Length: 353
Ligand SMILES: Nc1ncnc2c1ncn2[C@@H]1O[C@H](COP(=O)(O)OP(=O)(O)OP(=O)(O)O)[C@@H](O)[C@H]1O
Image: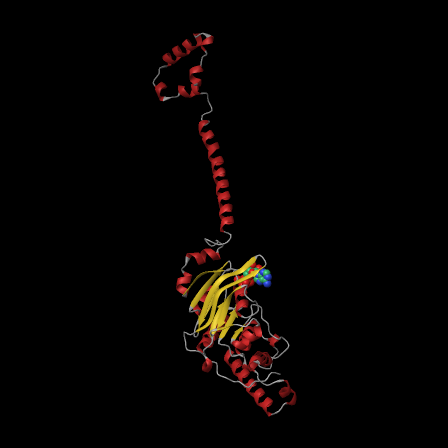
Protein backbone atom coordinates (compact mmCIF):
# COMPACT_ATOMS: atom_id res chain seq x y z
CA UNK A 1 0.00 0.00 0.00
CA UNK A 2 1.13 3.55 -0.62
CA UNK A 3 2.47 5.60 2.23
CA UNK A 4 2.45 9.25 2.93
CA UNK A 5 4.59 11.80 4.68
CA UNK A 6 2.73 14.92 3.61
CA UNK A 7 -0.70 15.52 5.08
CA UNK A 8 -0.72 19.07 3.92
CA UNK A 9 -3.86 21.16 3.99
CA UNK A 10 -4.90 22.07 0.44
CA UNK A 11 -5.86 25.60 1.39
CA UNK A 12 -2.56 26.21 3.15
CA UNK A 13 -0.56 25.64 -0.05
CA UNK A 14 -2.95 27.54 -2.31
CA UNK A 15 -1.69 30.67 -4.08
CA UNK A 16 -3.43 33.99 -3.48
CA UNK A 17 -6.85 34.21 -5.17
CA UNK A 18 -6.53 35.56 -8.69
CA UNK A 19 -3.03 34.17 -9.29
CA UNK A 20 -2.77 32.45 -12.66
CA UNK A 21 -2.29 28.73 -12.02
CA UNK A 22 -2.85 27.40 -15.52
CA UNK A 23 -1.67 29.23 -18.59
CA UNK A 24 -2.20 27.45 -21.92
CA UNK A 25 -0.95 29.35 -24.95
CA UNK A 26 -1.58 28.55 -28.60
CA UNK A 27 -2.33 24.90 -27.92
CA UNK A 28 -2.80 22.95 -31.13
CA UNK A 29 -3.24 19.20 -31.36
CA UNK A 30 -3.24 17.39 -34.67
CA UNK A 31 -3.96 13.74 -35.34
CA UNK A 32 -2.65 13.16 -38.86
CA UNK A 33 -4.75 15.40 -41.07
CA UNK A 34 -7.26 16.24 -38.34
CA UNK A 35 -6.74 19.33 -36.18
CA UNK A 36 -8.68 18.49 -33.02
CA UNK A 37 -7.55 21.63 -31.14
CA UNK A 38 -6.42 24.78 -32.89
CA UNK A 39 -4.45 27.60 -31.29
CA UNK A 40 -6.33 27.65 -27.98
CA UNK A 41 -5.36 30.02 -25.17
CA UNK A 42 -6.84 29.51 -21.71
CA UNK A 43 -5.95 30.66 -18.24
CA UNK A 44 -7.35 29.50 -14.92
CA UNK A 45 -6.75 31.52 -11.78
CA UNK A 46 -6.64 30.47 -8.18
CA UNK A 47 -10.10 30.60 -6.61
CA UNK A 48 -11.85 30.16 -9.96
CA UNK A 49 -14.15 27.57 -11.46
CA UNK A 50 -13.83 27.72 -15.25
CA UNK A 51 -16.10 25.83 -17.62
CA UNK A 52 -15.13 24.41 -20.99
CA UNK A 53 -18.10 23.68 -23.19
CA UNK A 54 -18.75 22.91 -26.83
CA UNK A 55 -20.64 20.51 -29.05
CA UNK A 56 -19.59 16.86 -29.39
CA UNK A 57 -16.21 16.51 -31.05
CA UNK A 58 -15.28 20.15 -30.36
CA UNK A 59 -11.91 19.12 -28.90
CA UNK A 60 -12.59 19.54 -25.16
CA UNK A 61 -11.20 16.20 -24.01
CA UNK A 62 -8.26 16.49 -26.39
CA UNK A 63 -7.48 19.87 -24.85
CA UNK A 64 -7.71 18.33 -21.36
CA UNK A 65 -5.33 15.60 -22.48
CA UNK A 66 -2.89 18.29 -23.61
CA UNK A 67 -3.08 19.87 -20.15
CA UNK A 68 -2.41 16.62 -18.31
CA UNK A 69 0.51 15.23 -20.26
CA UNK A 70 -1.50 12.47 -21.96
CA UNK A 71 -0.87 14.27 -25.24
CA UNK A 72 2.05 16.46 -26.13
CA UNK A 73 0.55 19.40 -28.03
CA UNK A 74 1.68 19.66 -31.65
CA UNK A 75 2.12 23.38 -31.03
CA UNK A 76 1.82 25.67 -28.04
CA UNK A 77 2.79 25.58 -24.41
CA UNK A 78 1.11 24.78 -21.11
CA UNK A 79 2.38 26.32 -17.89
CA UNK A 80 1.31 25.48 -14.37
CA UNK A 81 2.25 28.05 -11.75
CA UNK A 82 4.64 29.57 -14.26
CA UNK A 83 6.50 26.36 -15.08
CA UNK A 84 6.19 24.53 -18.40
CA UNK A 85 4.47 21.20 -17.75
CA UNK A 86 6.47 18.01 -18.18
CA UNK A 87 5.22 15.73 -21.00
CA UNK A 88 4.27 12.81 -18.70
CA UNK A 89 0.96 12.50 -16.91
CA UNK A 90 2.37 11.28 -13.58
CA UNK A 91 4.76 14.22 -13.55
CA UNK A 92 1.89 16.59 -14.30
CA UNK A 93 -0.02 15.11 -11.34
CA UNK A 94 3.06 15.51 -9.16
CA UNK A 95 3.32 19.13 -10.33
CA UNK A 96 -0.20 19.81 -9.04
CA UNK A 97 -2.81 19.07 -11.72
CA UNK A 98 -5.25 16.21 -11.10
CA UNK A 99 -8.12 15.04 -13.23
CA UNK A 100 -11.13 12.79 -13.48
CA UNK A 101 -12.16 11.02 -16.65
CA UNK A 102 -15.29 11.05 -18.78
CA UNK A 103 -15.50 7.28 -18.29
CA UNK A 104 -15.02 6.40 -14.64
CA UNK A 105 -11.62 4.79 -14.04
CA UNK A 106 -11.69 3.33 -10.55
CA UNK A 107 -10.07 0.15 -9.29
CA UNK A 108 -13.35 -1.72 -9.10
CA UNK A 109 -12.07 -4.59 -6.91
CA UNK A 110 -10.33 -2.36 -4.38
CA UNK A 111 -12.11 -0.72 -1.48
CA UNK A 112 -13.20 2.87 -1.53
CA UNK A 113 -10.40 3.77 0.91
CA UNK A 114 -7.76 1.92 -1.11
CA UNK A 115 -8.77 3.82 -4.23
CA UNK A 116 -8.10 7.10 -2.46
CA UNK A 117 -4.81 5.81 -1.07
CA UNK A 118 -3.70 4.98 -4.61
CA UNK A 119 -4.37 8.60 -5.49
CA UNK A 120 -1.85 9.66 -2.85
CA UNK A 121 1.12 7.98 -4.45
CA UNK A 122 2.49 11.22 -5.89
CA UNK A 123 2.65 12.62 -2.35
CA UNK A 124 4.42 9.58 -0.94
CA UNK A 125 8.04 9.90 0.04
CA UNK A 126 8.63 6.50 1.62
CA UNK A 127 10.68 4.35 -0.72
CA UNK A 128 10.70 0.65 -1.57
CA UNK A 129 12.92 -0.47 1.34
CA UNK A 130 10.92 1.51 3.82
CA UNK A 131 7.81 -0.34 2.66
CA UNK A 132 9.54 -3.72 2.78
CA UNK A 133 11.15 -3.22 6.19
CA UNK A 134 8.10 -1.50 7.65
CA UNK A 135 10.07 0.60 10.05
CA UNK A 136 8.65 3.37 12.25
CA UNK A 137 8.86 5.89 9.39
CA UNK A 138 6.73 3.66 7.22
CA UNK A 139 4.02 3.14 9.85
CA UNK A 140 3.86 6.82 10.65
CA UNK A 141 3.58 7.74 6.98
CA UNK A 142 0.95 5.09 6.36
CA UNK A 143 -1.17 6.29 9.28
CA UNK A 144 -0.93 9.87 8.02
CA UNK A 145 -1.91 8.80 4.53
CA UNK A 146 -4.93 6.86 5.78
CA UNK A 147 -6.01 9.78 7.94
CA UNK A 148 -5.87 12.14 4.97
CA UNK A 149 -7.72 9.64 2.76
CA UNK A 150 -10.47 9.33 5.39
CA UNK A 151 -10.65 13.11 5.60
CA UNK A 152 -11.22 13.25 1.86
CA UNK A 153 -13.86 10.54 2.01
CA UNK A 154 -15.59 12.54 4.74
CA UNK A 155 -15.35 15.62 2.53
CA UNK A 156 -17.08 13.93 -0.42
CA UNK A 157 -19.56 12.08 1.82
CA UNK A 158 -18.24 8.53 1.45
CA UNK A 159 -16.53 7.93 4.81
CA UNK A 160 -19.09 5.35 5.85
CA UNK A 161 -18.43 3.35 2.72
CA UNK A 162 -14.64 3.30 3.10
CA UNK A 163 -14.48 -0.51 3.32
CA UNK A 164 -16.89 -1.29 0.48
CA UNK A 165 -15.62 -2.38 -2.90
CA UNK A 166 -15.66 0.50 -5.37
CA UNK A 167 -17.67 -1.53 -7.86
CA UNK A 168 -20.56 -1.81 -5.38
CA UNK A 169 -21.08 1.94 -5.17
CA UNK A 170 -23.94 3.53 -7.07
CA UNK A 171 -22.90 5.52 -10.12
CA UNK A 172 -23.10 8.98 -8.52
CA UNK A 173 -20.93 7.84 -5.62
CA UNK A 174 -18.35 6.35 -7.97
CA UNK A 175 -18.01 9.80 -9.51
CA UNK A 176 -17.53 11.28 -6.02
CA UNK A 177 -14.89 8.66 -5.28
CA UNK A 178 -13.06 9.62 -8.48
CA UNK A 179 -13.01 13.20 -7.25
CA UNK A 180 -11.74 12.12 -3.82
CA UNK A 181 -8.98 10.11 -5.47
CA UNK A 182 -7.99 13.09 -7.63
CA UNK A 183 -7.95 15.34 -4.56
CA UNK A 184 -5.67 12.85 -2.81
CA UNK A 185 -2.76 14.17 -4.86
CA UNK A 186 -3.39 17.61 -3.26
CA UNK A 187 -3.78 19.41 -6.58
CA UNK A 188 -3.75 23.14 -7.11
CA UNK A 189 -5.89 22.61 -10.20
CA UNK A 190 -8.56 19.95 -10.64
CA UNK A 191 -9.78 19.05 -14.12
CA UNK A 192 -13.20 17.42 -14.23
CA UNK A 193 -14.32 15.76 -17.46
CA UNK A 194 -18.12 15.57 -17.45
CA UNK A 195 -18.50 15.06 -13.69
CA UNK A 196 -22.30 14.85 -13.81
CA UNK A 197 -22.65 12.49 -16.78
CA UNK A 198 -25.29 9.91 -15.90
CA UNK A 199 -26.29 11.63 -12.66
CA UNK A 200 -29.86 12.35 -11.62
CA UNK A 201 -30.82 15.95 -10.69
CA UNK A 202 -30.20 15.40 -6.95
CA UNK A 203 -26.75 13.93 -7.59
CA UNK A 204 -25.97 16.80 -9.97
CA UNK A 205 -26.94 19.31 -7.31
CA UNK A 206 -24.70 17.51 -4.78
CA UNK A 207 -21.82 17.51 -7.29
CA UNK A 208 -22.26 21.25 -7.72
CA UNK A 209 -22.01 21.79 -3.95
CA UNK A 210 -18.94 19.56 -3.80
CA UNK A 211 -17.17 21.53 -6.54
CA UNK A 212 -17.94 24.82 -4.81
CA UNK A 213 -16.44 23.37 -1.63
CA UNK A 214 -13.31 22.24 -3.51
CA UNK A 215 -12.88 25.73 -4.90
CA UNK A 216 -13.41 27.23 -1.44
CA UNK A 217 -10.63 25.01 -0.09
CA UNK A 218 -8.21 26.61 -2.53
CA UNK A 219 -8.19 24.28 -5.55
CA UNK A 220 -8.94 25.92 -8.89
CA UNK A 221 -11.30 23.91 -11.09
CA UNK A 222 -11.60 23.51 -14.85
CA UNK A 223 -14.67 21.54 -15.82
CA UNK A 224 -16.01 20.08 -19.07
CA UNK A 225 -19.72 19.51 -19.03
CA UNK A 226 -22.65 19.20 -21.42
CA UNK A 227 -25.26 20.15 -18.81
CA UNK A 228 -25.63 23.87 -19.53
CA UNK A 229 -27.69 24.70 -16.44
CA UNK A 230 -25.04 23.09 -14.29
CA UNK A 231 -22.17 24.88 -16.01
CA UNK A 232 -23.72 28.35 -16.07
CA UNK A 233 -24.69 28.03 -12.43
CA UNK A 234 -21.31 26.73 -11.33
CA UNK A 235 -18.67 28.64 -13.25
CA UNK A 236 -17.09 32.05 -12.84
CA UNK A 237 -15.99 31.96 -16.46
CA UNK A 238 -16.86 29.81 -19.44
CA UNK A 239 -14.90 29.15 -22.64
CA UNK A 240 -16.60 27.68 -25.68
CA UNK A 241 -14.75 25.40 -28.09
CA UNK A 242 -16.16 24.80 -31.55
CA UNK A 243 -14.37 22.71 -34.16
CA UNK A 244 -11.22 22.85 -32.07
CA UNK A 245 -11.15 26.64 -31.80
CA UNK A 246 -12.11 28.91 -28.95
CA UNK A 247 -15.24 30.73 -30.08
CA UNK A 248 -15.82 32.92 -27.04
CA UNK A 249 -14.86 33.19 -23.38
CA UNK A 250 -16.60 35.20 -20.70
CA UNK A 251 -18.87 35.19 -17.70
CA UNK A 252 -21.84 32.80 -17.87
CA UNK A 253 -24.38 35.53 -18.73
CA UNK A 254 -22.30 36.78 -21.67
CA UNK A 255 -21.67 33.31 -23.06
CA UNK A 256 -25.25 32.19 -22.53
CA UNK A 257 -26.58 35.17 -24.47
CA UNK A 258 -24.16 34.92 -27.40
CA UNK A 259 -25.96 33.95 -30.60
CA UNK A 260 -22.85 32.25 -31.98
CA UNK A 261 -22.88 29.80 -29.09
CA UNK A 262 -26.50 28.86 -29.75
CA UNK A 263 -25.73 28.56 -33.47
CA UNK A 264 -22.73 26.34 -32.74
CA UNK A 265 -24.86 24.00 -30.67
CA UNK A 266 -27.47 23.70 -33.38
CA UNK A 267 -24.80 22.97 -35.93
CA UNK A 268 -23.95 26.20 -37.75
CA UNK A 269 -20.25 26.44 -38.66
CA UNK A 270 -17.92 29.23 -37.57
CA UNK A 271 -17.86 32.25 -39.89
CA UNK A 272 -14.19 31.80 -40.78
CA UNK A 273 -13.63 28.17 -39.96
CA UNK A 274 -11.34 26.00 -42.05
CA UNK A 275 -14.32 24.37 -43.85
CA UNK A 276 -16.01 27.70 -44.61
CA UNK A 277 -15.16 27.60 -48.34
CA UNK A 278 -16.65 24.13 -48.72
CA UNK A 279 -19.71 25.10 -46.73
CA UNK A 280 -20.18 28.25 -48.84
CA UNK A 281 -19.94 26.13 -51.99
CA UNK A 282 -22.59 23.71 -50.77
CA UNK A 283 -24.85 26.58 -49.73
CA UNK A 284 -24.47 28.26 -53.14
CA UNK A 285 -25.33 24.98 -54.88
CA UNK A 286 -28.35 24.51 -52.63
CA UNK A 287 -29.52 28.09 -53.30
CA UNK A 288 -29.19 27.56 -57.08
CA UNK A 289 -31.14 24.31 -56.85
CA UNK A 290 -33.84 26.04 -54.80
CA UNK A 291 -34.06 28.89 -57.33
CA UNK A 292 -34.44 26.35 -60.16
CA UNK A 293 -37.16 24.54 -58.20
CA UNK A 294 -39.05 27.83 -57.62
CA UNK A 295 -38.77 28.73 -61.31
CA UNK A 296 -40.25 25.37 -62.28
CA UNK A 297 -43.00 25.78 -59.72
CA UNK A 298 -44.08 29.24 -61.05
CA UNK A 299 -43.85 28.39 -64.76
CA UNK A 300 -46.83 25.92 -64.87
CA UNK A 301 -48.87 28.42 -62.86
CA UNK A 302 -48.40 31.02 -65.60
CA UNK A 303 -49.42 28.52 -68.27
CA UNK A 304 -52.43 27.62 -66.18
CA UNK A 305 -53.53 31.28 -66.08
CA UNK A 306 -53.23 31.54 -69.84
CA UNK A 307 -55.24 28.35 -70.25
CA UNK A 308 -57.79 29.33 -67.66
CA UNK A 309 -60.41 29.76 -70.35
CA UNK A 310 -59.99 26.85 -72.71
CA UNK A 311 -62.32 28.26 -75.35
CA UNK A 312 -60.86 29.84 -78.50
CA UNK A 313 -60.39 33.63 -78.15
CA UNK A 314 -63.23 34.35 -80.56
CA UNK A 315 -65.67 32.71 -78.23
CA UNK A 316 -64.15 34.39 -75.23
CA UNK A 317 -64.45 37.75 -76.87
CA UNK A 318 -68.11 37.12 -77.41
CA UNK A 319 -68.45 37.35 -73.68
CA UNK A 320 -66.38 40.51 -73.44
CA UNK A 321 -68.10 43.59 -71.95
CA UNK A 322 -67.86 45.40 -75.30
CA UNK A 323 -70.26 42.86 -76.69
CA UNK A 324 -72.43 42.80 -73.69
CA UNK A 325 -74.82 45.40 -75.03
CA UNK A 326 -75.10 43.96 -78.56
CA UNK A 327 -78.58 42.98 -79.55
CA UNK A 328 -79.39 39.53 -80.82
CA UNK A 329 -80.08 41.04 -84.21
CA UNK A 330 -76.68 42.69 -84.38
CA UNK A 331 -75.01 39.43 -83.38
CA UNK A 332 -76.94 37.54 -85.95
CA UNK A 333 -76.04 40.09 -88.66
CA UNK A 334 -72.41 39.87 -87.72
CA UNK A 335 -72.50 36.10 -87.91
CA UNK A 336 -74.14 36.33 -91.31
CA UNK A 337 -71.44 38.73 -92.62
CA UNK A 338 -68.72 36.40 -91.45
CA UNK A 339 -70.43 33.41 -93.02
CA UNK A 340 -70.59 35.22 -96.37
CA UNK A 341 -67.00 36.38 -96.35
CA UNK A 342 -64.66 34.86 -98.97
CA UNK A 343 -62.87 31.75 -97.76
CA UNK A 344 -59.49 33.19 -98.68
CA UNK A 345 -60.09 36.04 -96.30
CA UNK A 346 -58.91 33.58 -93.69
CA UNK A 347 -61.71 34.03 -91.20
CA UNK A 348 -60.67 34.17 -87.64
CA UNK A 349 -57.13 35.06 -88.63
CA UNK A 350 -57.38 38.43 -86.92
CA UNK A 351 -58.35 36.76 -83.73
CA UNK A 352 -55.33 34.56 -83.90
CA UNK A 353 -52.93 37.48 -83.63
N1 LIG B 1 -6.50 9.93 -30.43
C1 LIG B 1 -7.17 10.46 -31.43
N2 LIG B 1 -6.85 10.16 -32.70
C2 LIG B 1 -7.52 10.71 -33.74
N3 LIG B 1 -8.55 11.60 -33.59
C3 LIG B 1 -8.91 11.91 -32.36
C4 LIG B 1 -8.26 11.37 -31.20
N4 LIG B 1 -8.82 11.88 -30.10
C5 LIG B 1 -9.79 12.70 -30.54
N5 LIG B 1 -9.85 12.71 -31.87
C6 LIG B 1 -10.75 13.50 -32.71
O1 LIG B 1 -10.60 14.84 -32.31
C7 LIG B 1 -11.85 15.53 -32.34
C8 LIG B 1 -12.14 16.11 -30.99
O2 LIG B 1 -12.46 15.04 -30.10
P1 LIG B 1 -12.69 15.28 -28.53
O3 LIG B 1 -12.97 13.95 -27.93
O4 LIG B 1 -11.55 16.04 -27.99
O5 LIG B 1 -13.99 16.16 -28.55
P2 LIG B 1 -14.93 16.55 -27.31
O6 LIG B 1 -15.26 17.98 -27.46
O7 LIG B 1 -14.31 16.11 -26.05
O8 LIG B 1 -16.21 15.66 -27.65
P3 LIG B 1 -17.30 15.02 -26.63
O9 LIG B 1 -18.07 16.16 -26.05
O10 LIG B 1 -18.16 14.20 -27.56
O11 LIG B 1 -16.56 14.22 -25.63
C9 LIG B 1 -12.87 14.50 -32.81
O12 LIG B 1 -13.04 14.66 -34.19
C10 LIG B 1 -12.23 13.20 -32.48
O13 LIG B 1 -12.68 12.18 -33.34
